[in-house]
Figure 1: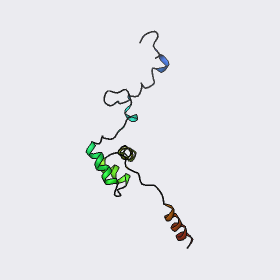
Figure 2 (figure 1 turned 45 degrees about the vertical axis):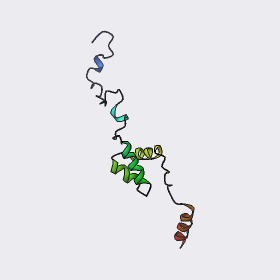
Figure 3 (figure 1 turned 180 degrees about the horizontal axis):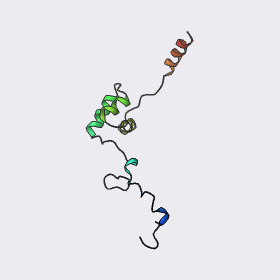
Figure 4 (figure 1 turned 120 degrees about the vertical axis):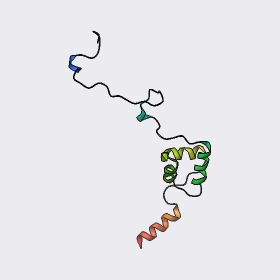
Length: 101
């Protein structure tokens, strides 16, 4: 170590820097990169075809080996209209009536 090194005697007993694994030669740590696999164009189409008739995002994400947010992103890019969360107004009225009775 040279005279201008930042490592001095007081740091000699400390552990060295953590070894951060990078993927694909990138400088980005692996923990901050996308972890899932990429879907092919045919898989993305299949994802959309299975979502439209009623398959849940969570189910599709597991089936295709991707995160639920990634599945949703693919559907948005494919122009698929996402199903609403929660109850529609008719179901809310019915739920209120059932709760009261």
